[in-house]
Image (cartoon, rainbow, N blue to C red):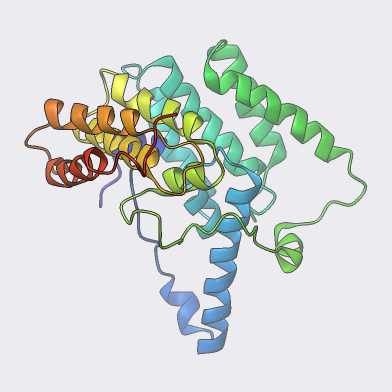
Length: 272
């Protein structure tokens, strides 16, 4: 699949589910057991990164897992460079680059580069949601720098244990939910994810197919049984909006089924 500015924004709103690229040369040089160990390390790396930093979007977490920080940086910068996008969306692009490079589970971690991107947000996009989040990450990095022992990613992964409350493959989660949506539901951060998705919905420069995907994710999050604060009215509102605005869209049939479920399960999906 060719990477375009459209794909960049898909990453920004975590609506894209890219497959992990294989590494034929690596596979050819190791035994089956080592391949399995390598795959587990990659899975653990992504989960650990997501647990530590809740603002990582799907594409960013995959870049950390797959050792593709530079590729992700380049892709996000195409979104940042597009002046048709809102300041909020362009700032998020820089913010995600900063998060990738500051991740302690990233073999390509570069605190200096991360700090530069966070400070760049303050200079170019003051007052945005990303700016306030970037300031918090700058303080976090300064605190980390004071730690007497600085472990690398592999050393941290050797002792890492998954959190009991972040099973991203939990069967009760709808199969269509993105990583961002799943994490938001399980960590009780749906309002924050909602803000991100609404950036896509409300930005005139975002393509219609991404807008309908954002509305679909909003509906799924608010009717998810694992959501500590489900909201039936919001779920219905977002799904209805998707069907009104995109009646012939790829997600219309799925949205209609979920809407029917929400309308007929008033007792199980209460309004907050």
